[in-house]
Structures are given as structure tokens and as C-alpha cells.
Image (cartoon, rainbow over all chains, first blue to last red):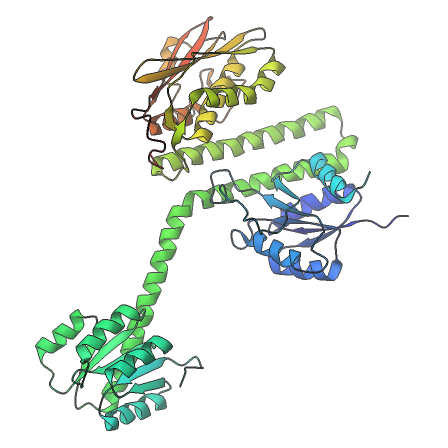
Length: 130
Length: 378
């Protein structure tokens, strides 16, 4: 039996967490959930997941970016693939958000809702799983 | 001497040492932190370094007068409450001090109770002022972000429902019979069109209150049309409809927002695909004269009855009535009309039942081609 890859999901909508968890578990991953940015960063440190998916808009708009920054600043967070989630419509204030050059790397930006097949495919690509 | 605790910091500027010490004793005993200065320059320096919440300033002092200090501090220190102390309280000097930004004045001689009462009132006044400012800023921010906020709140539940449907299909899809799968798919589609409706409605609200982010620059309409046609080609191919363009060379430039104009074209082409039968044709053409560019989108579809033609730009109007098979948001053409108006252009429609429908978008040509960028917002 192989060890399951660990995925950390950070989103303040518990239904979104639950729905996405079901998809990821069906895909064969071990899934950890955090309902706010602070918990997310703490869980990142204690669990050391293989990949994290972070919502952009949580308690405050742009909270996800600060979580991203904190995770990228940790030792284990430098190279681990991170996905950002966004349900911001295209006319919103983050429409024109252009990450500055020194902005931490985001491996993929996903629009909510995410198609299950797409999500599992992107993750498999990043983690190099067949 | 710095204010290290949570205590309110009070500054007393007076050339009389006895008065300074008296004030310090009274105020410190009442739980305030106190700084004192014997002359104006020192007082201003202390105020700039420590940002006191309140200051008592003697009117009559050597070198720099109390009136000048009040003027400087009210300008330099945010939200400071200033009280003028004066040995010869005249209405005239009091009024002058208030005009220069003082909150009140305290005539000499005064007793500790008067000092305490005025300090307490002054700090309350400051607190209210700051609170009011904060609330006003919050209100302004809320107003300018209101539509985006509403959009997020309204879309979130819909997004989550669609995510659940994804999850449902992922974990149990194989076990469902065909009819169950069809029910789920229909639910998904209805949710998705509700989401689109919310989006369109919000876009229209944004145009109406002027917060739609449009970047009006000098651009070529043929680039917009190419992009739109490219985007819509797969849909047309799927429905067996041909999509052609016929654009005259050397189109003059227009001033507009690329993103919203692409949405206008894709919207109208998208509509045409819904009402054009397989084997039909959609033609996008473009002509111009000295003042206007006319872009037309013509289809060989079902056409629209004359009595309905004038109503199609109205929100939620559907030509086919309630039984219309092709459900959209009901707001697409309203959006197009608003966008055209925000470009100082217009949209018109002509149709013949059985032959097809033609939409014409009219844009004013850019008057001065030397001008690269026009106004950012309509």
C-alpha cells in the first residue's frame, strides 16, 4: 500500500471545503481542511502537505495572498505546489490584480467552481502522479 | 518622556512653571499621561514627536504666541484637541482661537475641577470625531465596493452548489441511472444560468452607477471582431452554422474598452447561434464613413416578429415567451445596449421573420487620430 499524498485546503466556506474534499478523496488523496488563513498556516507547518489549495477571498479580500506569503516563507513551503482559488468575478477589484515580480510563485489559479476532472488532473500534473 | 501606556497623553504649554506643575499633578492624578513645555518651540517639538491627544496652550507667552501654536498644531497633529488658556479671556481672542482650530478656551484662574471636566469633554469630543471619520470612510468604501460585495455574496452559494454537484458526480456518478444523471445535469444548468443572470445584472448595475471598470483606449474594431469571432467559432461549428467576416480595410480607430466590446460581439453572435438553424450563416461585417463605423451581425435564422422587435433590449424580455427553449440570462442585449451607450454609440436591430435578424452597432470614429488615449471612464 502506498502512502497517500496530503493536500491542504484553505477556504472559509465549509460547504466548499466539504464538496472539494469529497472530490479529492475520491482521487486518492488525504485531505486536510482549514477554515481560515491562520489555521491554514498552522496546519501547513504541522502537516507538511504535498500541495495546498488556498482561497483568495476569506475573512478579508486578499487574505489568501497573505496566507500564500506566509506559506512560501516557511522552509517546506518554498517549492511545494500551491494553487489559488478565486470566485471573484472579472469586474471585481482583483480583476486587475497583477502579482508584482517578487510575488511568491502560484502554480495555478483556479476559478470556482472547479470541475472535478480538471482539479484532479492539475494536481496529478503538479505531483507527477500517473 | 514618552507615553508608554494606554493613557491619554495631554500636553501643557505655559511659561508659568507653577501652572504647568499644577496641571500635571491634577491630570496625572486623574489617570492621564502629561507632557509639559515652558515655551512654544519646545511644545511644538514635543507635540510632533509624541502626538498628544489634547493640548492646553497659554495664549500669552514670549517668542511664539499661543495663537500661532494653535494654528501649527491643528495643522500638524491629526485629531488633536486644543484648548487655549488665557489670563485675559476676551470674546475676541476666544473666537480667534476657535477659528484657528481650538476646541475651547479656559480662563485663568481655573480650579482642578474645571480642568478635569474640560479634559474629559475634550477627549470625548476627539473620540467622537475619530469615530465619525472612521464610519464615514467605511461607508464610502462600502458604497464603492457594494456591487462587488453583493456579487460575491450572491454567487458564493451558487458556486458551492455547483461544486457539490461536481462532488456528487465524482463520488457516485457511476451508480446513477441515466434519468438521475439527467436531473442532476439539469440542476447544474439552471444553477449556472442563475449565476450568469446575477453576473449580468450586476454588470448592468455597474454601468448604471459608473463603477464598471472600463479602460477606454484607442483601438481597432477589426481586432475586437477577430477576437470575438475566434471565441465564438467553436460554438458555431458545434451547431453547424458558418461564421464569416467581411470587414472593409483601413477602418478608422475608435475609443473603447476592449473587454466589454468583445462581450458585446460575443453576446450578439451567441444569440444568433441560438436562433439560427443548422446549415445557416452568421456574417459579421463592418463599414465606415467619415464619422461613424457600422458593425453588423446578420444571421439567417428564425427572425423576430415586428411587434417584438422594439422590446428585445428590455431586461428579461424573451421573444419566444415563457416556453422559450433557449434560456439565457435575459439580460444579454440590455447589457450590450448599455455598453454601446457608454461608448457614445448605439445598437439597432432589423429583422424579417423566416429570413433572419441583423444587429447594427454604430460607433463614432475617433475625431482626433493624434490623440492616443481618451478619458479613462465614461
